[in-house]
Image 1 (cartoon, rainbow, N blue to C red):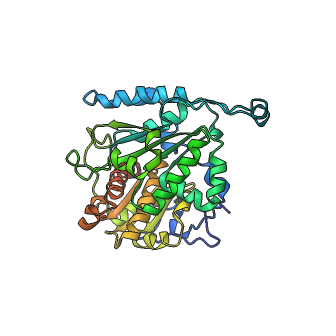
Image 2 (tube, one colour):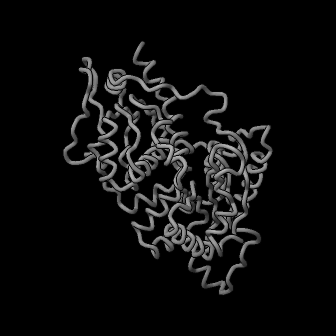
Length: 372
């Protein structure tokens, strides 16, 4: 039995009878995976969507010179990171502590949704001349989950052996988590680890509701001198020259597509939201193991903040894995209330809408294939 499934999985409900030869889709609501801490560390690499990300595959917008500048700055930064690490024997032989590298030990990418920050961060990871086991890449949430799984000191020891730590979607929503990660990063800088982080700017007018470099540098306090802020301007590439997100389908289309698509899951959206409350967010990635498409019926506005935040994490994991999402019910831009979109977690909700919209476009091909 797959580690991503519970002991007694139940088939997903269906609104229409399956055709002969169709396979029964999986149900995310039947999955409650156990994820050992070792896997959390081993999986701190760029997600599948960005495995092929390189600096030369990033296409800067000619109207936004800051994008081309970011490629050059990060390329130089990658070259400045030493790939090796002294062995214990060499450390004893050379009693003198190595000279600290010149300049900041970190870069901070500040920009809006969809300007390619994660692509650039993954490109930095790939370009850094160190073996994969000496580099780590994860979201802010994944990093705090790692500390929860390993404990603070063990996390310092584990990541302290790395040459580079990339943190995507750095968040300042929780003061406790911010202090925790800031303290962790201080320990890692002392160990010689290079750092890179991204965050988001809200859509809309420049400077409005901005997650600014000034906020980031203020909150990490003593580490501010270790980061070079790098502003990246531009529009969301997921919407650049593309049509609006497709309208949701009807229940019958979603269900039929789930049965005809190998590796698809099929769930009732309200039931999935309830199930997410029983699974730790650090396990949402494992919950999606082997899933090639997510089909959801009866999508509704999320009822509360806690549920919304869990959905954001699931959206991130699906986007990382390039899993198309086919739905019936409400459109994705109706998931979060106006109050939520004006509140402290608004940048997370806008990110989720942007990413789910991209996955909804991808899902259109599944319906087209099934109609042939």
